[in-house]
Amino acid sequence: MTKAKLHFLLLNLGHFLDHLVMLVFATVAALVLRFDWGIPYSELIAYATPGFIAFGIFSLPAGWLADRWSREGMMAIFFLGIGVFSIACAFARTPIEMAIGLFFVGMFAAIYHPVGLTLVVEGAKRTGMALALNGIWGNLGVGGAALLTGLMIDSAGWRSAFFWPGITSLVLGAAYIMLMWPEIVHLPKQKRAAARAAPTTQKRKTYLPQTDREIYLRITLIILFTAGISAFVFQSVTFALPKIFEERLTGIAETATMIGWATFIVAGVASLAQLAVGHLLDTAGPRTMFLFVSALQCVCFLLMPGLTGWWALIVALFFVTGSFGQLPINDYIIGKTATPELRASIYGARFVLTFTVLAISLPFIGWVHANWGFDMLFRILALISASVFIAASLLPKRVPEPATAPAE
Image (cartoon, rainbow, N blue to C red; front, side, top):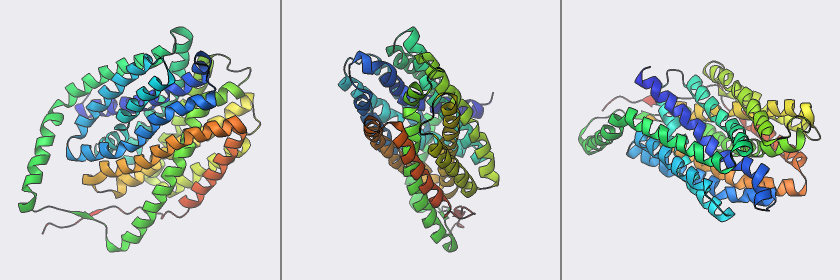
């Protein structure tokens, strides 16, 4: 296997771990801690909020540091950081200690999306397919969190669900450092040398042609809106899914392991949709895919209230498919329109918005569930998906790309 392929594999494994460690607590809270610590689910999930706030706000400095120091170096810090603090969460004795541990997990997990996605885009010949494959690994992390946590709860206790992913991340971090050591050490020196030579060196600059600037502004506003709104839908689907299945899959999934399997299978099957989305992004374009996945989500959320058993599982499979299928679209547009030298910073700004919304959505989910149950949440998500469909209809059919100005 070539170095480039090994690097892509480690980036994919990082995406898997990134989503897994952020969602272990969701399953632990739904199935165990509300009994062990005597705190209702609607109150307990609030302790995950600091972690998701950190997941959002630290995306911007992570992208900024990656552009100015080393993207490979930041990825090494990502692996080591989430490893250490996932292990720390395993030893939490109180909700406050857990919230502190989750905050630091979120802080280091924030590195992945602005930095890892930039490295994926840079090394890709087909941007859409590379993002889709990388997205599948992230989505398997979403499902894997519920599955692995359920298995650990039934076999070794909930603390092991934090401990072993932490150990795995430390091992992968060591492997990443060994593989990418030349880039971690030498590329930052090259960047500094280039910066010192900038005043006297002729450079090629990227720019958008005048005719595309209005389209670019429209795309930017749509990305900001859909990224924030879609993040709310994604968080509601992924964080609440183990609890939804505990309530709705009566007679199908009765144990923590079975609920974990149901979540993993739904996430795994839904992840395959990203392969189709990745292919169609490179052929049909982002507008068509945005319209399809948002419409699918809207219809499924309208069907979900009142459903239990197999019908609930089938409809959940389709709305999770829509939610996962939507993930690479904004990243694809940013990858195409952003200039290479600022791509990680732009991804960072995008994920500050996205993951801040994720954090805000947690107490909202708890409040809605405590007062009206998940049926009301499904109706709200249907309205949100409809708004994404309307925004996506305003996208142009062609996404402008930065051109290269001739050297002066």
